[in-house]
Amino acid sequence: MISTIRDRRAALSEISLYVGAYLVYVVTKGLVHNDTRSVGLVNGDRIVSLQKDLGFLWEPGWQSWAVENAKLLVVTMNWVYIITYWPVVLLAAVVLFNKKRRDYNFYRTVIFVDLAGAMLTFMVFPVASPFAIAGVELLDTIQEFGPKFYGSEGMASYYNISAAMPSLHFSWTVILAVLFWNSLRGWRRLLALLYPVLTFFAIVLTGNHFILDAVAGGALAALAFAVVWLLRLTVWPVRT
Image 1 (cartoon, rainbow, N blue to C red):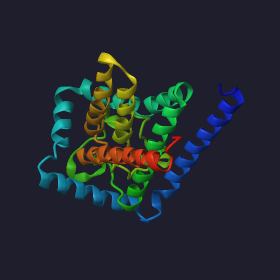
Image 2: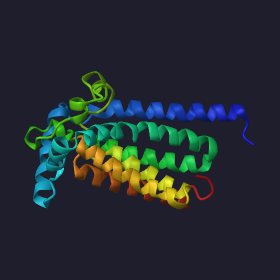
Image 3: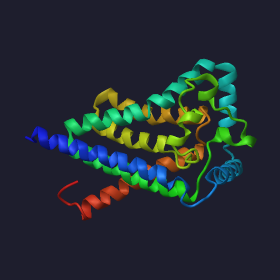
Image 4: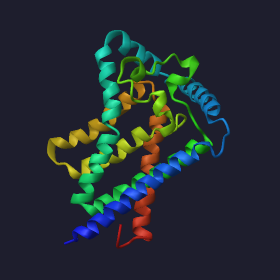
């Protein structure tokens, strides 16, 4: 049985890892482009053009219908956007760390590989949120209908406002969905399927992400799993 002192040291080590990752995330915001915001808007227009060419720029229509006909749904999706991200991620991490350390190490590593890929993309190809792109006609529904504290100007310095592609929000949801699918049994496995679906509509209806952002986030999650599984089979054949 692992001693309490060892558990505390492990917990402090993990917290330091997360803090370090966050600092890297903040520091790398402007490493490649001097005016990340402007580049993000230009790249956002490119995403719009690509989705138009592919025939599925559906976000404005979906949001417009929801705002006009189901405002309660919009407000609900605002809260879903917030609640299904950090609260779920952190709760899952704490529970897994305390209950199944081996599984925790695996999924934490997947998350960090995913984050590394995302941060590299954010640096090279920053993309603004859809609601910030003038020609798309999308609202920032969280600022429009609340809770307005989330994503406010006061919070802008704590996150990257041009990090919509790939969607980490959706990518991490997919990773957690795999965890839930492997951990739950019976009908509760449906929750693992519902989780990313619910998150997908939340990130799109709130105007925070394009559909392609979610697609890229899902692809990045799959790549992160592949990388960690490969490492598990080669570099870490015994430990994970």
